[in-house]
Amino acid sequence: MANSKYEYVKSFEDEDEIMFPNLIVVRIEDRHFQRFSEVHEFEKPNDEKALKLMSLCATLVLQEYPDIVFSFGFSDEYSFVFKQTTKFYQRRASKVVSIIVSFFTSVYVTKWKEFFPEKELKYPPSFHARPIVCASLEVLQEYLAWRQQHCHITNQYNTCLWELVKSGKTEKEALEILKGTQKQERNELLFQHFGINYRTLPQMFRQGTCVLRTEVEDIVKYSENGTPIKRMRRDTTTVHSKNIAGRSFWNEHQSLLKELGGFTKDVGKINSDYIRSFLFESKLMASTWIVIRIDGCHFHRFSEVHDFEKPNDEQALNLMNSCAVAVLQEFPDVVFSYGVSDEYSFVLKKDSQFCQRKASNIMSIMVSFFTSMYVMNWKAFFPQKELKYCPAFDGRAVCYPSTEILRDYLAWRQVDCHINNQYNTCFWMLVKSGKSKSEAQRTLKGTQAQEKKELLAWFGIDDYNALPVMFRQGSSVFRDGMAPNENRAASKNRCYKVIVEHCNIIEQSFWEEHPGILG
Image: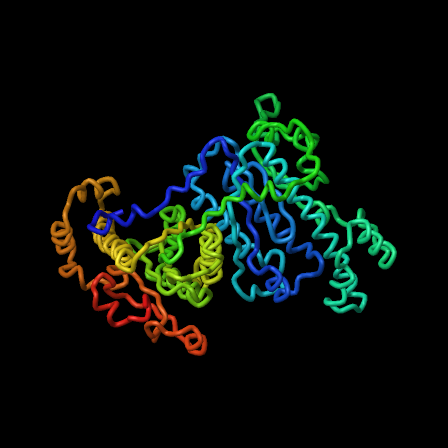
């Protein structure tokens, strides 16, 4: 990142490292799943296609990130367990959580048509995620037992509920019938009234789905005498087991024993309150501006694979802008955003209580939603280009205590935009003129702004400021017409248009022209 007088704002970023020897688990859950399943007419109580789509997402996550060795999921949730020695993104909770939830979302949207060819994705799905910090293997064992128990109890209850509804009861009547019932009573209800033996229902519904690593033997070639030469190859497999936290299941899988260790005993009574104490919930400081910064993950490679124009691809930038607009339309607490290249910063108002100011929830939901929009909007901006693989973004949440410091943060990002764009414009001019990338880097090493301007003039760009303003100043997204200190009742009755502008947000004049943004 570029150096500037605003660089000090980096000191407000929290290094949220999960220390060794804690085991890292990331749990992903669909946001507003009940509404999503109703809008898309999922079969009740279980939609097999929807469950298989979730399972595929989990499988591709394991294939993409080798540090994840096991996952367990049911309904709208999946838990991902990292190997004990992982150094994935230096074990920073925000990075780990955001990348996994972003990639999972990206796969979900990309693969939707494979499972629901007759159904349009009516709005962007999004997931929230949290890290679970397991202090020992025994805590992980209890956590997995807790989630599988929850799978069983929830499925049994929902099966009863929807059988009652299908039989003619209203949802309210069905809920009243099931109120206070125990496991055995629900089994009897299913068998006696509907002829359903609960134990014969599909394992995936009752027990959830596990995805784990295996090693398979492949024939890579044959010797001269025809003897096959074999190599071991890592793969993933999907299984359904009635006790994923049991010693017998764990000991059957060498990858789990190798990367995590073995269980010494089986789980007895599950203490869910004890397990919840390991949920890593960082609450953001009250009465501070919250900024969620989203960055493309490995976007240098992504831009090359998808042949983005260098140094700036206007359509790619407009795609990012469309996602930012959607974020402001979806989340009323976001009052302003600023973006450049593959990053966007979203500012939440100081008194926001979104997700009770829980950092992982806010950050993961916004990263997930942004990713959904990016994949869903791809064709609108690149109608002739296929999305060759699933993009992902990482995110972080940072608090800034005053409006002055928040504005310095935004100024820092815009200064960074200018310096990087000037450098990249010079760099790609040199490359297009015939120099190698390493030669271009050596030519630009240590050059100052004036020298870069002279170099650009040599390429026929006499005035750097004549380049498109979006490239030089980035994009600002905000609601047009907001009045300062507008009361909530009035604001709810007004329609705001979310607009994208390319302007100087460092100068005081911008904020004087738009006093309602920061109040």
